[in-house]
Length: 77
Image 1 (cartoon, rainbow, N blue to C red):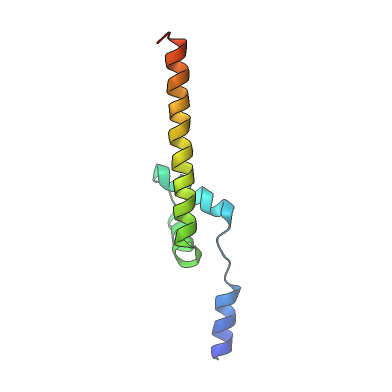
Image 2 (cartoon, rainbow, N blue to C red):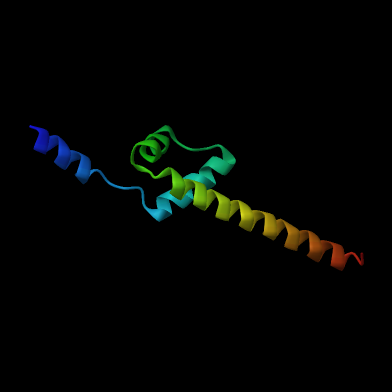
């Protein structure tokens, strides 16, 4: 019986990179579904979510800096 439960654990799907990115983006807006939240916490790797979150946050900050520079430059400042 123990072999059956070990096989069931191994057969559980892992969270893909695309699902991780989608979950992190959803968390930015606070709209994560309960089903996806449960999947992330049961099958996901915390370090993957942290890494993707840091990368997306860094990308957002640099995008905002670029937008502000373009707007200020076009305004003649």
